[in-house]
Image 1: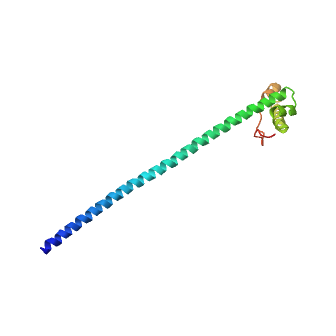
Image 2 (image 1 turned 180 degrees about the vertical axis):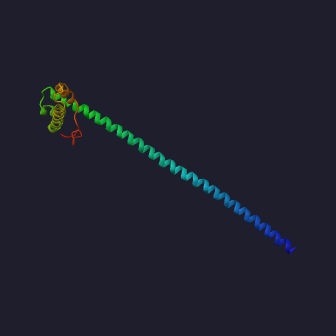
Image 3 (image 1 turned 135 degrees about the vertical axis):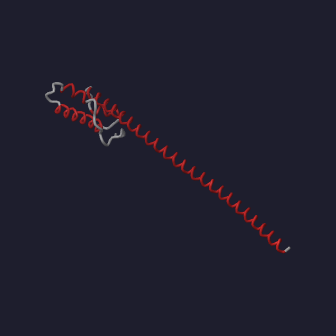
Length: 148
């Protein structure tokens, strides 16, 4: 009987070990699944931030392009005001900007017109082209609209 008891105990011990091993495998499978969920969630979070940053960069680039176009329109308005014969000082006061800002627009316009006239000398349409060229001005560095 001692032999059967020993065999019975070995069988019971084996069952107990198999149960514990099965529980351990089940727990590890659960942990592996949860770890996969964690990594997927962090990857999605990073991807979401990267996408938002990409979209923000596009929006900022578009806003800067629109702002540059609006500043070109504003400078064109200043050129039209200068064309009326109003003084730089008078325009500066009307627009609440510095006289140097108005002068920079005026000087840039004159330089561009002279460069255009020199390049087109003998073309017969210097005056027409010069007046068209006065419609566009290069960027006047250092002014962001708050120079008073």
